[in-house]
Length: 201
Image 1 (spheres, rainbow, N blue to C red):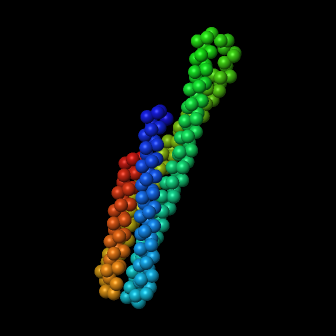
Image 2 (cartoon, rainbow, N blue to C red):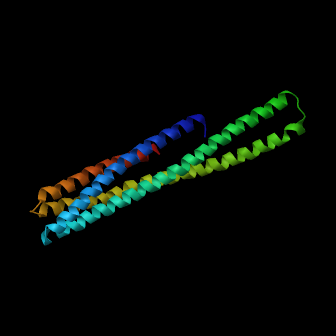
Image 3 (cartoon, rainbow, N blue to C red):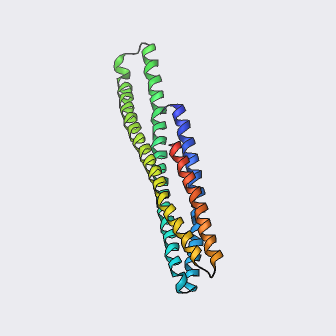
């Protein structure tokens, strides 16, 4: 990776981590609301039992998004480790290259710096392999993010179910509607985050 690519890469990492943190906080509060709705529906009798099922769907969707974020975090950790290794190799390569050029300019016998040149070639091969692996990891991150945006469609179905169920419940309807609205709002933020990450990667 060139210096400009490295800078851009670390910016992507920072922005992605910020989005993951934002979603983690959002998902935690959403899960608490869904659990409260489950408890409320269990205590509201048979007429609200169906809402308990919908609340369970919200929790299930929430868990899926959390799994996606964990995969994303793991993939980013791998990429950071690989990028760090690439930077080390690049620094050593620059030093080896300077050594070879210095030896050549001073007219040092070829046999004296043959080992340095050999090491430089090995390092270059190692760097190329690492660069290919890094690009594969980038593709994996892109795939995770794109599959997440598709997962949001599933969330839209759950959101619609929560609104329908909320409308049919008479007792504690405001509380059930509040859960439906907070889920809808959370889903908008989740979708926006994943669209942003999709463009970023």
